[in-house]
Length: 193
Image 1: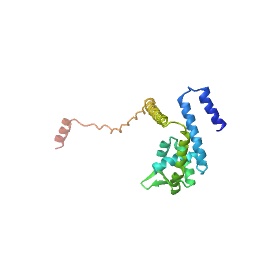
Image 2: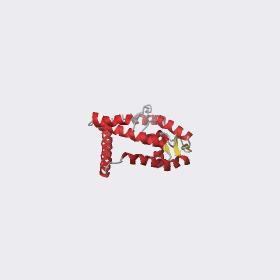
Image 3: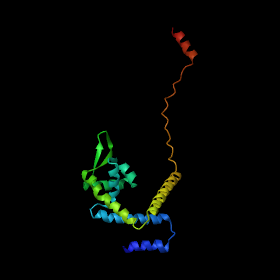
Image 4: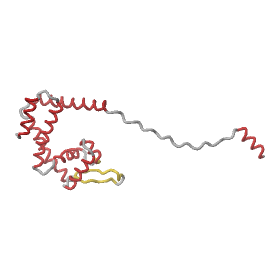
């Protein structure tokens, strides 16, 4: 165990055992990331590519914008990662002949084959994390974390201000054309006859 990890554990058990859950979850997430990062590095796969590969293994052929949304990162971050993954031969980017605006990201054969190699590493990380924990505690933890995610998602909807209404621009009106009263037009017709 690294000194940093020992300090984190001591912090949670001794210094602030009742601190906010958000901090505890963040530290747990960092520990998961580090454990997986070490395993991925052994195969030359940067941790930053893991999220995108995992998404593409489930839904190949997404636009870069869709990929950003699912990964929860900004589009420039996705663009940089996809360019690097393309240079490593994990993905190819394509435009549809009918839609030149969007760039679609597809796994290459090499990117697709990484699933068999990398998913077991993530499973191993999860298994290490639950060693010595009773199965019913794991079920409770999953149930509680999912409930927290749902609660925070509902709260986000309540906190997000509604999008401003777009003003609909009225079509320019045609210039008013004076219309002669019916009686005057009819008199003009009689006069002309």
